[in-house]
Amino acid sequence: MENEINEGLKIEGRNAVLEAFRSGKTIDKLFVLDGCKDGPIQSIMREARKNDTIVNFVTKERLDQISETKKHQGVIAYAAAYHYAEVEDILNRAKEKGEPPFLILLDNIEDPHNLGAIIRTANLAGAHGVIIPKRRAVGLTATVAKASAGAINYTPVAKVTNLSQTMKELKKEGIWFVCADMDGTPMYDLDLTGPMGLVIGNEGEGVSKLVKENCDFVASIPMQGDIDSLNASVACGVLAYEMVRQRR
Image (tube, rainbow, N blue to C red; front, side, top):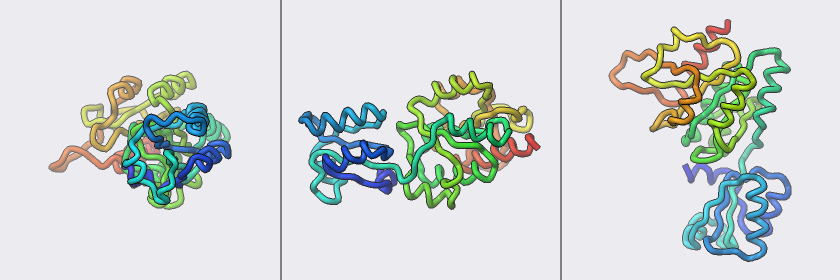
């Protein structure tokens, strides 16, 4: 995953990183030399805390390894290739269209090709936006943008600190949640109309326990082959279009 995150804008050096924060760039990840606490680094850390940026304290050897200029001055930042939306922007999009909210929430998707494909599916299925967590998940890299086939320019993606907490807040807005799991109820037997959030889990581990506990429905996709799981983006597409079918 880290190699793909690197395809965002890499910013090296104290002044450059500080100016990136102050100019409003979205910083997905910050790598700081472990133990370095001088004035400029403290200023960068204040900006990181203010923006809830993920900070990784690493060795000089690690910084040297990921540096291109070899003049990192103890700090390297990765800025997102595209701007993130707010969850409120996604809800307002649904209101403007006069439609019940249709959201896709991703629980720690790490493969940028999966994220890009899901954004593409979200756009074509009429979802109002995609919500991803800040930690342990791929962000909006150049690879994601390419895999989305342009959909990233039309479908807003919001990044949140805590996916479970965000779901609790969205429930207050009347939104129900369904997650994909092979042990769930067949998707054809569920009512997936109305304000709905579709939750897709991590490629290897599926939906995490806390996130699953906040789902109102658990849907399974009928399968007749010799293996027991689908790629995350394919599972998202199948369930999203079952929701489209039911809404029509």
